[in-house]
Every structure is written in C-alpha cells, then in structure tokens.
Length: 391
Ligand SMILES: *[C@@H]1O[C@H](CO)[C@@H](O)[C@H](O)[C@H]1NC(C)=O
Ligand SMILES: *[C@@H]1O[C@H](CO)[C@@H](O)[C@H](O)[C@H]1NC(C)=O
Ligand SMILES: *[C@@H]1O[C@H](CO)[C@@H](O)[C@H](O)[C@H]1NC(C)=O
Ligand SMILES: *[C@@H]1O[C@H](CO)[C@@H](O)[C@H](O)[C@H]1NC(C)=O
Ligand SMILES: CC(=O)N[C@H]1CO[C@H](CO)[C@@H](O)[C@@H]1O
Image (cartoon, rainbow, N blue to C red; front, side, top):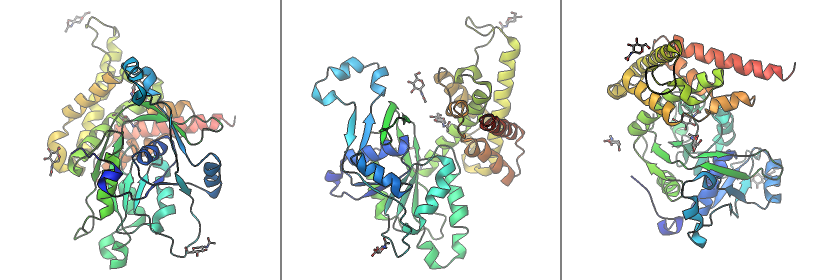
C-alpha cells in the first residue's frame, strides 16, 4: 500500500515528536514539517534547545544526491519547481526532558531516530510521556530494538495490572535506505545532507498483549504523515517487513564485519570466479570467500529456522546466500557503515547485527561460531582503535 495526500488533505495536522537529531532524525523531521505537520524535536538538553532557537528554529536539508544523480541536468533545467537544493523546514519547535514529573503532556506520535546503541536511554527519557494512545516509530538499523525495549520497560505485561497495559504504546517498525549524514561543521548542527535517494517501509508491530488492544488513531495518523513525505514511504504488514528485515540483517551480518576488519569495499566479498574473463586470479581467495559465505549464511538460516519457523520456507541458506551475494555485487564500490564507523573511531552497530544473531542463537539453542567470532573481532577492533587514542 502506498499512502499519499498531505496533512491538509487528510484534514488533520497532528503534532509529531522526533527524538534523535542526527542525520536521519533531521531528514524525517524536515520532510514531515514540509508536508505540513507541526513538528517538535525532542532534544537531549535545554542547551540544545537554546542552540536550536538561536539557529532560527529551522532544519536545513542539502540535497547532495542531486550532484551525483544521472538526471541532474534534467532536474536543474526543469524550471523553478526543480530548484530543490538546499531547502529549509521552518517553524519547528524543540523541547528537552524537563525533569518536571508533575503529569507532563502526553506525546501521541513519536519518531525515534537515534542510533541503535542510544535507543534504550532515549526511550527512557520519554517513557513517562507515552500511553496506550501513543504510537512510536522505531527507525534504527539492525534488529532487536523492539525486543530490547519490551524486555527493559514492559517485561511480561500480561502479568501486570491494567494500568501497565495503559502505558504501552503501539510500535511501528521502519526501515530506511535513504543515505544521509551530518557534517560536524560549526553552525551546521541542524543541517542534514541527503546523500542518496532511497525509500522506506513501515509496518505496525503486532502487540504482545493478549487480547491485543485496538489500534490507536495515532498509528493511522503517523503512517499517513510518513506516507505524505517525499521520502518514498510504503506501508506493509509485519510479516512481509520482518522477512525483508531478516534478509537485510543477514547481508549486514556477513558483509559489514568482514569489510570493517579487512578495510575493504563490499564487492571484495564476492570475487568473480578465477576462470571468468575478469579479475580474480587467486584460487585461494576465491574459495575462502565462497566457503565463508556459505558457512555464514547456513548459520544464519539455522538461527532463523528455530527463531522464526513460519518464515523458514523463504529463508533457506541458499536464498540468504543469493541475497547477500546480490547485495555485495550491487554495492561493490561502497564502504559499509561498519567500516566507516571503525575507520573514524566510532562505536559500530555490531551489537545489533552479529550480537543480535548470537543472542538469538543462544536463546534457541543454535550454535553460532561464525557470528560469535565476527562479533568478537569487531569488538576487539573497536577497543583497539579506542585505546590507540590514548597511547
Ligand atoms: C511543571 O509542570 C506544571 C504543569 O505542567 C507547570 O505548572 C509547572 O510550572 C512546571 N514546573 C516547572 C519547574 O517547569
Ligand atoms: C503481507 O504482505 C505481502 C506483500 O505485500 C503479501 O504477499 C501477504 O499476503 C501479506 N500477508 C498478510 C497476512 O496480509
Ligand atoms: C579453470 O582453470 C583451471 C586452470 O587454470 C582449469 O584446470 C579448470 O578446469 C578450469 N575450470 C573451469 C570450470 O573452466
Ligand atoms: C553506494 O555507492 C553509490 C555510488 O558510489 C551510491 O550512489 C549509493 O547510494 C551507495 N549505496 C549505499 C547503500 O550507500
Ligand atoms: C547498520 C548497517 O550496516 N545497515 C545497512 C544494512 O544493509 C543495508 C543494505 O542491505 C544498508 O542500506 C544499511 O545501511
């Protein structure tokens, strides 16, 4: 299903809070504002709120993708409507956790766009402002964020009183393939660079409560809002999205750690066979990569088979390997996000990629030697680059 229409057309203009003012959060906040929705950035501290007001209470978007876009000339000669870079979303509000515990106003529609490793902390800061009428959109890379939130904040809700159920919002899981980044330049704190056009998919995560509560209006509102942006958003069912997320996770789990450890681009994972007319002449390299791919994909398929038996028909070792090789070839010139994180000394998302698979395997009694080794080596690499800063 593809959602269209603007806020005005839908006859509603419900305020949307965006938590996580990184590149992704700012991109979504700006596009939601552009579609006519009132937007509030929920920032870390009053200091950030002050800096935001001083910078004009606006979000800048630089459409860097236009520079590399093949139809650039067409776009730019297409008249005034095509002059789309850069632009500004104005009249955006900002607030910070107030520490004022006396019944703050509830947040009905929240987009959580923090990095995976910051999400629990971020959720904790807004939890008291959410209720069963709220909807939270999770936009993190990797898997297991939803489960971590449930475990941390709502353990076994069915054993609790009705009041606890009344605190639990509806969750929408999102996946975003738009490329964007924020440059650490003075005065550009609230500017996001849209570097590659992608798309995004959203699905409502079925509630763990029994019986499941009815869907709040806020869920429909926020899906309509996201669908009205220029970010090519589609809404699907959870089973469909889950299947895609598991494939994407497999690609990230096999490609990212190896590229980060070997400091190479994605394409090196799928060298062409030695006898093909092109490159690879090293039989040992070719066979090692083939053997790595098939053992990694077989392990992931075995984990999925136990954890998600209903999806197993589609997630065979072969289906996973075909997908991973396809991604490695179509992004052969790219540097994975994990390689980028490692080379700039940042913490990676390995905890939510290979770490997630290791935990899932443990929970279901599936041995995970390949993912455990990858996880360990990336952790080692992170620690080493962190410590070298002090030596
Ligand atoms: C706390 O919130 C209440 C109600 O929203 C408000 O009346 C009060 O002024 C707030 N106190 C502070 C210190 O912000
Ligand atoms: C979910 O979506 C997929 C793809 O659009 C579709 O094939 C499938 O039938 C849907 N499943 C349910 C239960 O609606
Ligand atoms: C590939 O090349 C090797 C020697 O270079 C040869 O022995 C082998 O038969 C070739 N394999 C195929 C599938 O052509
Ligand atoms: C991969 O790189 C190409 C160009 O080098 C770029 O257009 C594309 O958006 C990149 N893909 C991802 C997923 O970063
Ligand atoms: C965290 C991470 O590396 N995410 C990547 C997973 O793979 C997709 C492509 O399948 C990338 O778009 C993500 O950036």
